[in-house]
Length: 317
Image (cartoon, rainbow, N blue to C red):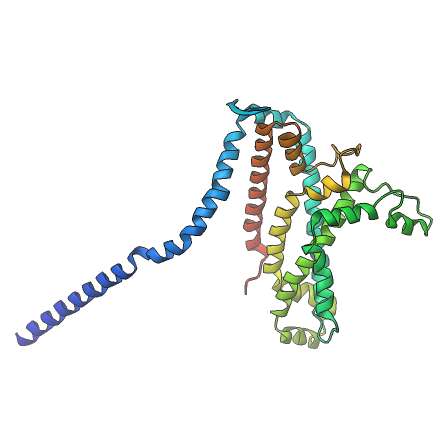
């Protein structure tokens, strides 16, 4: 009887102590209040500068604007006009082609990053700075310089080709050649960033793995394909996502390198170029908003597809 009473008293004391601890814990940190307080400024910024503009733009895509403002609800008129227009598919194809060329720059960056990561390479940091410099340069300045390089009359590229007897190429005034030229500039300007990201991934791979591969007789190419690329797959996926988003936002290079008076301007415009023309040149804010929302949806779908596919080829071990 005495033992039973003692055990009941001990249980009561334990329950009382747990209630006290739980009450104190709820007072000190009720439902993660401090975590929400720290996150709140970021959430407010996102809501004001990101979410609300998206909601506004989505609404404006169903409206028509006058020259001096004033939105009038027109339903699906802007969206039907986009579907009936032949310019949107062409602009989307141009944008996707440029994006594909950016993705082709990732294998080039893998190869260069592996060369820069070789043990004992002198001036490796200097080479990385040289590759990274274009990435931090102004896109307008890059477009101006490459526009002069690709100039069909006095451009240094045509002068170089002329020494081999190759006739001058109209780089920025021939439809598909202009898109390829713009893609070359895009790959060149993004190469440094890709090399830095991939170089960081390469330095995280243990050197013992390469030593074991060499002992097993693996060539440098075999090491690159069977060892480097699988272990770099998370970094490669990260660059894939960023390259697709960056490629779909193409505007600066086309705007400066092609120019307003170029006869192929309409055939080389991107989705953002089409948005700029409709919203700010033609002053059709409703159609411009519809193009912006369409572009956002396309980027969202492409990103979602990449996240779905990445489970099949990315190695996180």
